[in-house]
Length: 547
Ligand code: NAD
Image 1 (tube, helix red, strand yellow):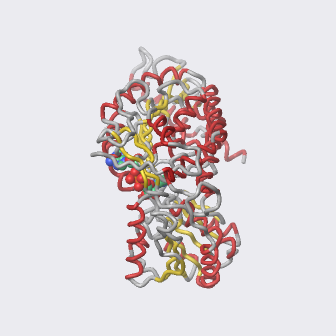
Image 2 (cartoon, rainbow, N blue to C red):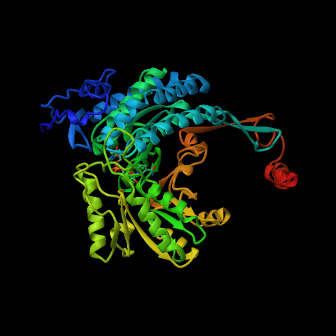
Image 3 (cartoon, rainbow, N blue to C red):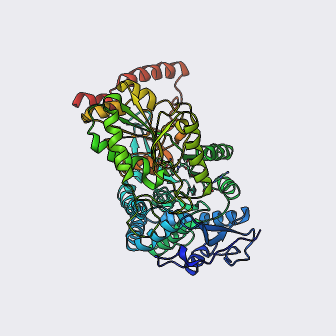
């Protein structure tokens, strides 16, 4: 099928980007040996996939549609490169990743342009991604040595025996990432994998490949050896399974639906995986909350990246005693948001990614209205701003069984409901299969924390929307229930990429009956030893004594 291209220059207007620059980035796919067609001319065929700019709905370039053989090649090359990468010290690997973080900051102007070009997001939301990556690099460069160090464990019969655990890289890690945060989510799971001594093959979303390719260029400039990081582009159902079949670990971020397919395949291959999936995140406002702060926080929670953020709040539960006051403030703040797609910091909210996402948003709102909901602000497609722009939308009186109340909209649409008590708010917040992120607003922070403990989510931010949870890189992040498996960030974020090997030693030879001792004597001796051992203080009991 021929790909329609559109050479209208307005997609690139206001940026330093050009179609030549994007072609050069596309040429990085398979640049090291595989025969991949990177022709981005008008007459491209099934070997390539067109990439469109959401702000103009025009083709800005194309990328190779990699085949199973291309994935094989990329993983083979990564495997060959991995052992010498793992042989370097963790400190040396950390220095390269730190340099990469510096380069991301240095090249922020182009990265911001690329992010806006291929996602349509506002520049202020693109900036969050640029700031996030260097912090993650520094965190893992700093904490990597401790995570990879040998650890002493209690031996079977101390001091006659010892045990220590070593941490080894799993080998080649596959990373599959979505389109909504193509800078952050292409590398946030790659950085700890590389620090741990693994090689990585990344499959970015086919809608947003260029940011990931620009990152590959910066990693190379930072000194990452050839083939330690590779990118395969193309269609998810073709490239994704091929990658899962060949790697030693798979880190997936995307929808719950695809996550199930990925987990099944990983299970069949007996490889471990982490799944960062969808959400239907609640935001709770208690009666003693600072209402102005809560309203500003709700705007950030609901409309960042036009709601296309896995941590976005889509269900708001507000104590009935402050419901009207909160709604007034929230609607007021929301109406002040500027919608736009220019390559500057003027707009607060940008475009949706494509027509499918727009259709989903419109369907959820229309169905809610048909079943009795009211729109307090928004509720309109804005083709005058951009083909896929949709106004930040607040709904009330939403039927609790409506699609918009139960399924992830992944757009700038939120429903607000009064609740009669804190317990009712907690029940409503937990009434979902998902459990990714929640936000709780309380005047008394301790009370907010107590409520947070009752909410079934991987992250709960008190008096903040999501930034304090995400940016706490030292703390694990992930989902309960249908929101995922495993955790990124923190020690957990690197340990998933390590195999542990226990090395046990004996100072007294084989732990078996000594020669010439009757088995009945040996059995009696072992019974006594076992009883004694059970009475010996454990490490945790000794710690308790000294507390
Ligand atoms: P998606 O599942 O459709 O696609 C994600 C990635 O999976 C893409 O690279 C895609 O090409 C690939 N893919 C598609 N089919 C595949 C298959 N059969 N096997 C392997 N890979 C396949 O998700 P999306 O719609 O692009 O992203 C939005 C979703 O991602 C939302 O649900 C959002 O909540 C979720 N998300 C979660 C997090 C998180 O950290 N929990 C972060 C961002 C997005």
